[in-house]
Image (cartoon, rainbow, N blue to C red; front, side, top):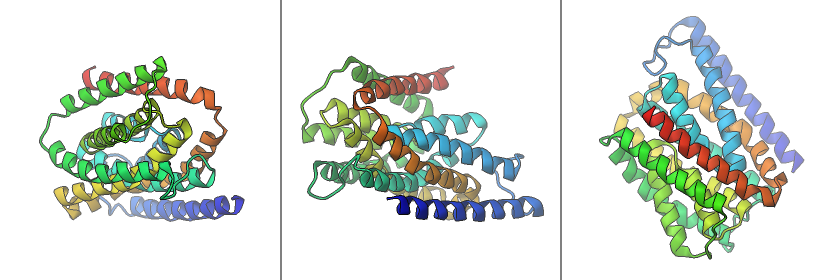
Length: 294
């Protein structure tokens, strides 16, 4: 296991070094111009997004939620367009989710095999999610963002209250279908709202706490990449490629934090997971509503 961590660390460091070199070169030459960053410094933007992605993915990979729900409003407040933010979050989280799921499996937080219940839940949520997230991406191009964010904020807040109340239902596959459709719909619409609904929904429906976190990170990767592909064709390849300065640091930052997040999940006391998740989900719901209306 230590060897795997070492190889992964070397890979991330090489990727980071190559990214920094490219950014410094372009910033020094003055050849790079992008509407997505406006008058901001290219180097400053890169390191800001790198740090934000690292922090958001650390929370997400350790607790199964928070990357898109936190990062999406933060980037919009900073001044990035929602049509830049959402595909950037989808792409970066697809890499982060895949990486985190591998480490969760290796650390035995979740059992991702075809025969296991965890593996079957991942497959179910992924199949439902890929279809739903693509449809939601098309809808997002023409719907009111305020209405969408209000709906997601209320939904997440309610699920947080249920978690804190310790209400728990018997596991059923019908409940998992509802969780998968609802969470993926949220993801395609706004870039956030997937993790809180999937993780909280699984726990409320009777799935194990740490298993729910591992399942969420595993299902997130293919769903996110499907949503990104939809935005790629909707916006066009030229517009997407021009925004690489947003995509690259978010992806690199998220990749750096995933093994740490999986390790935190493994070490976290079992009896503290549900109340911690409940508090976080409530905060994310209130945060979403506050940023929408205040």
